Length: 324
Image 1 (cartoon, rainbow, N blue to C red):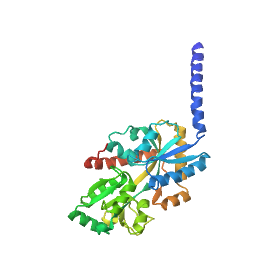
Image 2: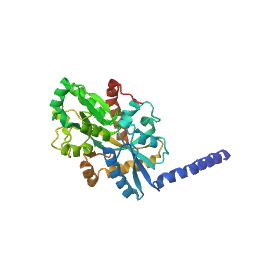
Image 3: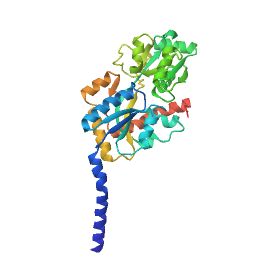
Image 4: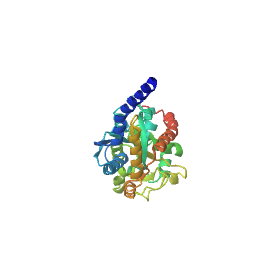
């Protein structure tokens, strides 16, 4: 009997110790949630973050604020979350390249997104638009391929390993041509470089370049997704332009939390993401910005990251992309 009492008392003590943890998880959220975004305002990550933050605030009846922390291929924002408290109050929405490419490219990151972040939900997919400066005289993908075979040409990107860089390299490999990569510190200066003629072309997010296309400052050649952009349905897909029906160079935006965040909190965020991204008004708002709402489960998001890592790792290795 004494031994039974000791076991019972030990179990009671253990249960009592768990109560604050369980209570804290069940009570979440009770204060402001921050969602960091690793790019400047106006791009796909920023658009999704602000729509999602608004919806999350309505759902939880707590403030949810979006905060831009651009730099290092979106890794500054992701690093803040990875190294922060795993309590669900600081989250990040990142392009999948933060997990699939950045650990292979950036040598001095102080965290590993593959092991220190939970991919809570794949929120949306986005694509890139291939644009060229009008002075190049290039208006179509076949014209660009022909010119790249006979002339030295350059393309701009927002930095090593970002979606625009990867999309360009996948295009060049598929088309069998070469162009010189000119990396800039973010999509905005990359866009300005193509507009100014410092670089000939670039794969850039449709919302960030469409105004310049409509103003005649850039020529739109193709979109990298398998289907036309709702923002510019007249622009052909890269798959059609290259006669490669299987070609789909799109990227995902993922809601992430610090590894170690309580399972009930992750489950609550997963549930919220899946339901929010299925709302007709949310899907319509994102479609208007050339984004496709998804809202996956955590299990599917984690599996997708592994699949995308396998897809892009050979590309990174072939290009020997490395940066400080």
